[in-house]
Length: 263
Picture (cartoon, helix red, strand yellow):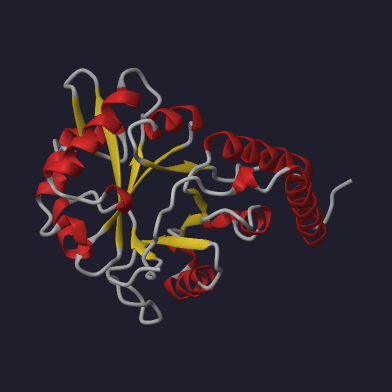
């Protein structure tokens, strides 16, 4: 028998509360951060600033930039690329950082696309550490994101902050959603990441399920229209444990704080 959308949402809400209390009953330590990361007060960051010119412009406007990277074992280079074919643009992460004026004036969300493949799990973090030293960027202004918590555990060994990508899968029922939440809680307990990241479509499920976790959303669905997207961004940044919302705007919205303030 099919359940209505309203009943489904109610079931999700009840289940997330139950899971939340169950987690608290065992230990609060599992969802607390082990690394102190001071997020800027401005929660609106620029999504996919992979082009050097775009990055230069948006760095002066936004508190943080999200950049995608791929490691090519064949060339032994880290390229700025969202998809494998983007490596043909031949922009290395080193060139990307070098294109920015005063790079330490910004925060960075680095989406390491193939972190868990081959040598990447060591080459990516070791190279990032080297580049941060070269360009005099504070390590606590950088987050490395991936879905493999085991690979991120290796990244932590290099002294870098990690961000667990835990986007809510396209489940069709409350039971699947509950299993996904429980699995994410298990990974959080083992990894202790600075935060979890997910699409805005995971809200409010993720927001309710992980009240003690820093949550970073990407609000990049512009198909709903700019005004609706903007309203959702404003809703998200007013949630205390939501620390970053990635957007595709040309500049931060008027309701945002200045980029240089920190918590």
